Length: 399
Ligand SMILES: Cc1cc2nc3c(=O)[nH]c(=O)nc-3n(C[C@H](O)[C@H](O)[C@H](O)COP(=O)(O)OP(=O)(O)OC[C@H]3O[C@@H](n4cnc5c(N)ncnc54)[C@H](O)[C@@H]3O)c2cc1C
Image 1 (cartoon, helix red, strand yellow):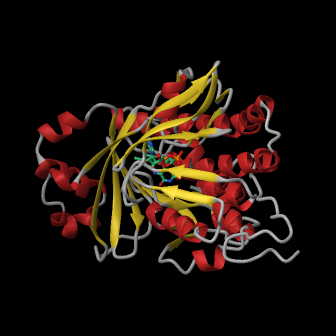
Image 2 (image 1 turned 180 degrees about the horizontal axis):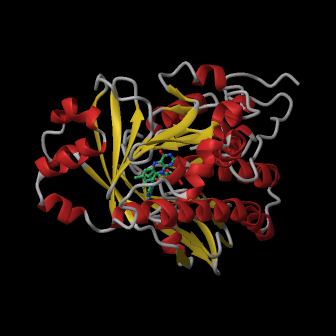
Image 3 (image 1 turned 180 degrees about the vertical axis):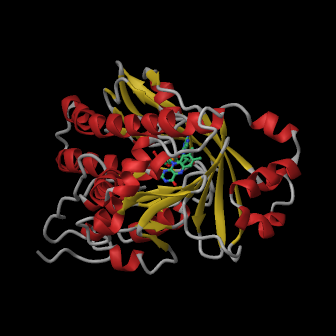
């Protein structure tokens, strides 16, 4: 959606195909980081965007057993919006789609599921899609697979995937917000258990972390045992756990970390999770996907508009974005190995925070560094100014 917006803004006729009828799904996280807020600011959309309901997270903190840990201070960042905006991703995507309506070059088609690629002579020339009105074929100079960690596009293109491995899955559920006594701590760790709570205003979105593949055994113990585990991890949630009435209220989200060896083929490019699936650790996947979109528009927008795109131009996107993706995945794997796995397997049964967490808790300058890595990411991208006279979404750029 973001790439569609940016390319259309650059004057490139762009079609976004989304297989669902809307963006209302609960599986993608809720964090809009300072890097994305900067992008919104550069697009002139920040003020309107922040009128949408959101909660501000200025610091990343948590409980590790009896230790209060501090991980990142976003309010130390040299950014116009030095905080994470907690907002359901569907609000963010709806906002972009709504703002995109003023861009004549942008078309968004929902209920259009890409099922295959069109091609000739080893070059991808578009996609086949399923729509309620029947099959659709779209011809395109460039096809971009931004279809997430189970990407049909990358699979159809036969692009080779490197599985890095994630030892966790997540049980995702919500409970009413007035749970008394629960502070805004993001992470709650007790021996063998990890719970993340996201403040969504009138409710807590909860992510209970389990070892990979353990969902069936968790369910086999029954819902009361599961809720008991949750309340032991965060006792303040207990009064509202009755909101979870059946397993239908608990969604299993499988976690993956992987990346494509090559993000492109002639006529085709993958970005976001389709190129590098991110785990929820650090809540950075959305922002990395947005940064990919900004880099792609910067590198390819003008060339697409002028009809001068080469395969080398498309490969340049991977050259620019592979390093930030690798570094971020390395940070996620490091957190998995140092924190998540020892807690979930019981190796850290005394629950002393690992050294990196103790250092962060005691050294504010390190929390500033962590805020940079999590909040701005490696190699932050910036939106290129729109061409003079061009409609830039809601306004004509006067400069
Ligand atoms: C449990 C969990 C929690 C997470 N929490 C966070 C968080 O809090 N913050 C964060 O930043 N990241 C989080 N992440 C990571 C984040 O969800 C992803 O990195 C991010 O959503 C990637 O964005 P994307 O646009 O590449 O893919 P997606 O968000 O997966 O979007 C892909 C889109 O393509 C559509 N689509 C798929 N197939 C087709 C098709 N064949 N035809 C047409 N459309 C199709 C889908 O419907 C979807 O709208 C979490 C991940 C997990 C697993």
